[in-house]
Length: 83
Image 1 (tube, one colour):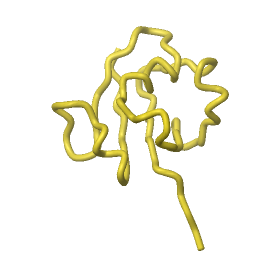
Image 2 (cartoon, one colour; image 1 turned 90 degrees about the vertical axis):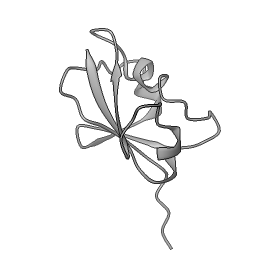
Image 3 (cartoon, rainbow, N blue to C red; image 1 turned 45 degrees about the vertical axis):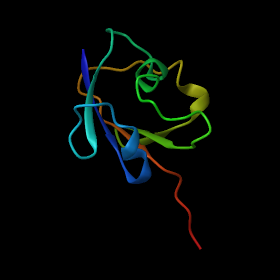
């Protein structure tokens, strides 16, 4: 199935080839985990980011347990800093 993923800020530089502006479509197997989807985005392991799935923040400890469904909206954000 195809899943749309949106990357914001400095994470846009890691979009796969053929992406448009800040969005890409990734193909995953039915019943794929969130981790399987994220492994397709070449963000370096030392680069922190937040995952928003259908308007809810996802903890990295849950990436293996969460299954992706058609129509899910996934957003990757750099950490938000305030002052």
